[in-house]
Length: 510
RNA sequence: GCCAGAGUAGCUCAGUGGUAGAGCAGAGGACUCAUAAGCCUUUGGUCGGCAGUUCAAAUCUGCCCUCUGGCACCA
Image 1 (cartoon, rainbow, N blue to C red):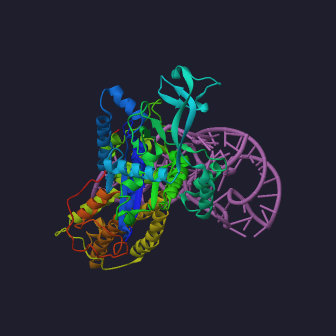
Image 2 (cartoon, rainbow, N blue to C red):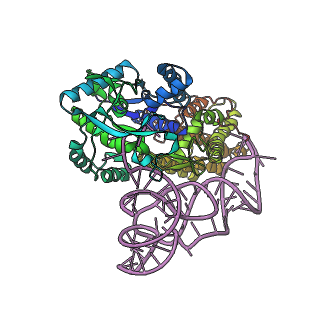
Image 3 (cartoon, chains in turn orange, green):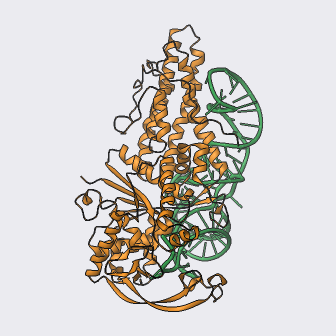
């Protein structure tokens, strides 16, 4: 049976991971975990794009071989995944032979079919920067000083026949209007396609770029950028082998808005179509993080290191922040204050503290067991009814990638847990001689446990480790499936022995 | 210039035809099991501007203003 197959874009091995890389992996991971919990067999791919000019240059600058440089970067990105609790099933590197073999196979196939041809590439070349320039690189009609001497050159190159598929692609996009989420992005692609496409130059001569995959039909050239990078989505799942159809076509490529047009929305569908391979089902396009209102950039020096953040607040809280703040598809603002506010208010006060209250109150019981609920009066009824409205709503939001609203809705329920405790005040009832008060006190603890259990079920995709700790504190294992765990089940944990008091989100002094 | 997104309380944002919402921040209060936490009450908005459609518009239409991003081979 075909798996649900989801990918991130592969990151370019030209620097350390930043918050944008971290976000994309977390978003994709939350979707992957949500699908697994929903009962889908899920396959999650991420990886690293390692060839090309910039990697070659950077490696040379540092005086190391490109592959050794890539190994260092790959280690960082893989460490990012484990630090952020990313549940990827595979991590592809475009320098692996499993990948290079597939790239060469596709190129050869397309060449044999006549989809690739040789012609002269004309352009402006800067020797100092070792790169071709575009008209838009000009400033006031002149080449800026940093490019040094710029000469117009003409050299042989290989081209892929994009243009002949333009009408096909437009038709395809018009027929499947849910190919790209959010929808307005699809309109943007169609807008882009109103202008005629040029064929795509896919090669660089070996004397100028060695660090790449040689073209199978002409070893004097290496493959340039997109045929190499995009192909990872199929090379990683065994294109050309029997198992391929178990995963491909991908259900979602999760990408940033910067690489939608033209790579993922134009080159990739046309490449696949030309090669006779089915298209991915959809693209999920996310926005970017601004930093305190400013664009994140190396020159501004405001690049945020996800390792530092994860160190400060823990991976779960960072994941929560990403998912709570970002309206998928839009841009969002990051600031340390915002992160700390979410950490302290939502996580520490509303949620973590509530568990601590339960453990404290329950810890005073002789057997430390979660009591049976024996009554349901109005306060209890209110809580249960709120849950019954909450979870279908949250699941619906999750399914539609409206995670920020899902969490917002879930938090109204979590807050209700604190309000409920204030209404019952079991710490007072416990001192009462009246047996009815004793019942109410025990029931209140049972309800609090149930509130925390249910909230943790829906938090599992977002905060897997924290959810696990909450379950553990209530003497239970974390869940692997929503099924059977989302329904109100007041005495599910009755009799479980409560753990020691636990601070899930310790206060952070700035 | 063209296209798209955004413009709602001090801040971050929900809200697509029916008497303006949440969280945070601010103010007041009662409580004290708990991470000086939680609970209750409360201040605060001409929903970018103007015009129109409608019994009724933040929500639909038109024009305008501001911000952001894209406009092709650059990851």
